[in-house]
Image (cartoon, rainbow over all chains, first blue to last red; front, top):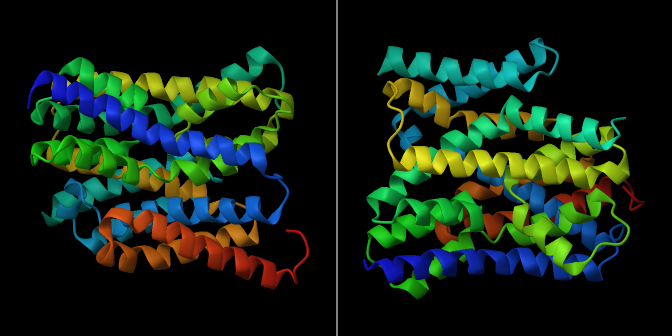
Length: 109
Length: 237
């Protein structure tokens, strides 16, 4: 593709993403942050983000798809075990989960 | 309670460096290398990270460019993939408890928001004095944005070659991080929403892959909201 077209794509994508952010600001200006609508949209955010994370683990589109589902789920279980064992240290959980995925993928693959 | 400009900025940078900056550095390396493969220039890839600042949309942009779609279709797909920013901005901005803020200031806050800042700030805010939360957010968000742009350029220029299984473990860091952070989210309605979001996404992804997250948000969030209300007998929270 031509350079100008590629620039147009980058700028267009930035503008089109900003539309949602800008709309969010417009909505914020108009709602009561203690009202039911705010609570509902907070729930929508949490459902979306949780769904996104669940999708990354269960149905990955990245190279993770080459790792079998039991290994991915096993690594998540190990991550949570380490997280709670080390008094809810995020680093401990993430390191344990990441390393165990690598080790299991190495041993199986 | 953390307060004071210096202390809050220090905490924000340390929190960013503890994992999120590293996550962004690594995931954006993946984007950088894909962008190069799609024919984008290095400065285009870096500016895409800086100004789009939403990986799902950036990936949609690159993938559709590779397959030779028209510009309008690419921009539309990128926008849809990043539609989560609407509810995220709405649920996030009031949490900073800023009394009066200008419209341009709020627009800048919205532009800097990403899933990392959203999750980490909502987690850390209760420990930060309300008047310092905005400063914490700006410091945290700009720190990880800098790491993301650096990662894009490193990935673009093919900086690091690690053994395959280690790369897989590194890719897995991002979902692990969010799974752990989200597991600590308080609030019954929020917890119901997350569980129902996980239950909704497989079918939504199978039926409507391009808008699966939107469907998941609305279905899971609405049911979770209703269930939260029902459980607490309709009173607040």
